[in-house]
Image 1 (cartoon, helix red, strand yellow):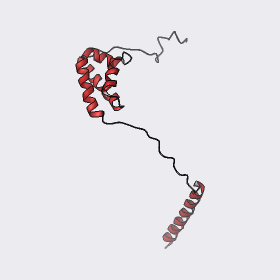
Image 2: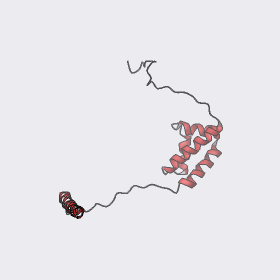
Image 3: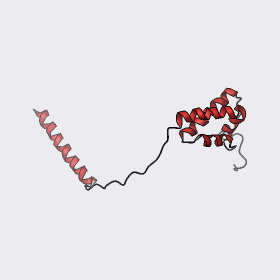
Length: 126
């Protein structure tokens, strides 16, 4: 089956459907978009730009349906909650290498287990 000519009986063919929605649904979607990106550390200005960018079709559609003022209030509300939470990744200082090899630790653990096993055998024989 050629790439450009999919077989209609193929169960894995990508099919898009439209689902009717209301203004309430758009409101919920706008909150989800704003919260998701606010959690990622976006500022109010960045969030507003996101809603205005046509690439983000869901967010852009919510802006067109709900209007500037409603989207701005949603952004301010989500940034007030999640805007203070920022994730930063920092490199740790280089760790000091161990002076003892792992093999010597394994050998020590084996000898300790043998000692414990012999103590258990001795106690059970009493």
